[in-house]
Image 1: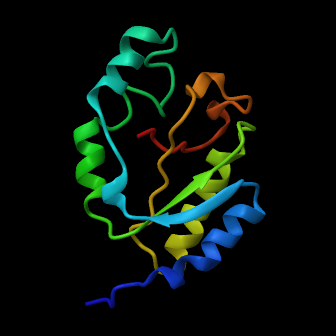
Image 2 (image 1 turned 120 degrees about the vertical axis):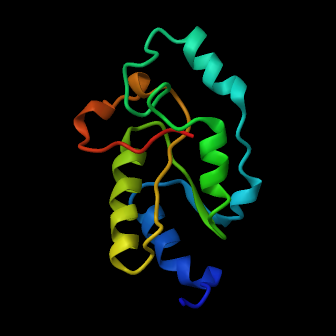
Length: 132
């Protein structure tokens, strides 16, 4: 059985995220992340790009799947990026780094503007993270 991690074990990731371009990053409790069904419907009925990106519905997890997944974590890192397209590449790279350092449940999830509106197209990535 592995020993629970305390927030100080994440400090190197917080620094690295900021060094790679985030405005800020902090540790949060996953239980504070709000998921809602209306967001998915807003995409389905209000977005011309619905279904065109692997990061968006119907390909992304449902609000219920997202909530169940978040509930499996004791801590999360919330990062705030400018809309410059680097968030996805940065977070997927850090997900891999965290995994290789023994954080085997590391998982990057995105949120924000529609994938097709981001200046750096998500289509250039091998495996973009799903949106929450």
